[in-house]
Image (tube, rainbow, N blue to C red; front, side, top):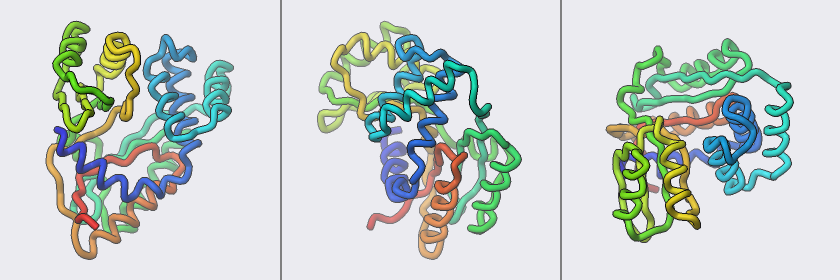
Length: 241
């Protein structure tokens, strides 16, 4: 589990800079979370986690507040989630998560990124079964047994827990996110999450080599340039540079 997460983290880091619309991305996610789960972060743990992540990514407070105000007023766009799956350059497996107010436009834009890079978009479920849909929490700590005990007492289903270099990493099923986050914040008052999110972690990796490398980078760049794209998950393993 940990190696798969590390591989994804390292490979995504090479394309993360292409995401130039960070404010818009967080604005949509915060708006949707507040609209569906309530505008009070104390009562909506998913919203609280999003706000914390947004602040760490240096999203200004006014962007966060505007998204919550929009949800509170009931006005604004009516976004819906959309997920696309397929095979990218080098036959790597790809999941693209979007929030859209126009599914037809979004599908067309995402499909174009696939076709322009000799990739193949599939139907729902094409590759998702080869990923674990996991909640991940990373924070400073030494005592993984105390962390595990706190989670077990809260009846959280823990998939894996790692303790390395003064950092503890907890993996749970995505459905356990809110319960796990609450258990950790209640058990450890000064906890500061370095990672606090839900991801698709690949069960296996696919080496991407040769001419497929620039094609893969173009593929990610095209997707990252789309306003509707929120996250790209893949199992590509790129050579170290």
